[in-house]
Image (cartoon, rainbow, N blue to C red):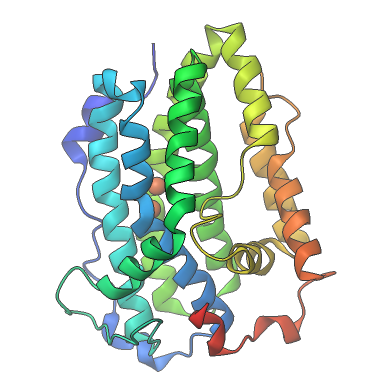
Length: 298
Ligand SMILES: [Fe+2]
Ligand SMILES: [Fe+2]
C-alpha cells in the first residue's frame, strides 16, 4: 500500500495560489541575469511537463487509475508553475527568445506561446526518439511503472531542492515569495512519487535492480535535451556550485538512497560534478554570476 493520501491530494489540487505575491514590487529589486537564466530554464521545464506526460501515457502507466488521476492534476499544477515564472520574468523586465514577447502580471494566458512552440520544434527528431525509447523501455521492462515513479521522485526532489537553492541565493524578496508558494506543490509531487516508488521497489527484486541500473546509467537532470546542454549545466552550477550546493546535492542522493535498492546512489553529486567540468567552473565566482542576455537566444 502507498502511504500517500491520494484522495486528499486530488480534492485539494488547484493552481498555485499567488494571492498576496507583490507583483507590483518586482521592479523595485534587480533580478541578476544569472538568476533570470535559472528561472527561464525552470519555466521552460515546467511548461514542458505536458510533453513528458504524452510519452508516459503511451505506456502501461495508463492502466493504473491511481497513477493517471495523480498525473492529471500534476500536469495542471506544473502548467501554472511555468506561467508563474513567466510572469515574474516579464515583470522583472526580461523579454526572451525568439520573439521578445512582453509578459506582465495580467497578460493573457498562455504566455510565451511562440517560445514554447519554438522549443518543441527545436527538439524535433530527438523528441520522437525519446518517445520511442520510452515506449521500448515500457515494453521491455516489466516494472516500468516502478521506474517511472522512481524517476519522477528524483525529478521532483531535484526541482524542489533547486527552488530551495534559488531562495538561498537570491536577494529578490518577491522571487522568494513566489518560490515558496511553488515549493508547496513540489513537495506534494515528490511525496506521491516517492511513496509509489517505495511501494513498487519494495515488492520486486527485479524492479530494484532495473531501477538502480537505469538511474545510474540513463538518468540526466530534468530538462536535459529540452534546452541546450549549457543551460542545464549553467543552472546546476549556479545553484549547486558552492559548498552549500554540494551538500544539497549529497543530501538529495541520501534521500534517494532511502528508497529500497537505491542505497549509495550518487547521481546528483555526479551530475553536479559533470556540469561543473563541462563549464570548467572550479567554483562559482562573481565572473560567473553575470552572463550576457544573449545566452537567452540559445
Ligand atoms: Fe513544478
Ligand atoms: Fe512538480
